[in-house]
Image (cartoon, rainbow, N blue to C red; front, side, top):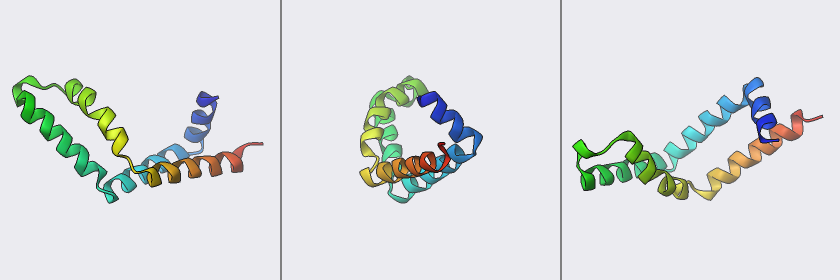
Length: 89
């Protein structure tokens, strides 16, 4: 079911629009700056020579997900539901 929904979002161009909306909302609410600060903390703790992108992703992803405001999650979910309601038949 998830794959079918994703395919429909891609085909209709809605996935890209949702990604742009999410990107804008995350920047607007300061999420991006918070994640950037988390990355700096990890680099400072481990040392720039000892950190890989993989290390950053592993360390920051769980915290970054928690930092996404509920209002942004709700808006995105609402848009997806509206799209599916409009295009499912």
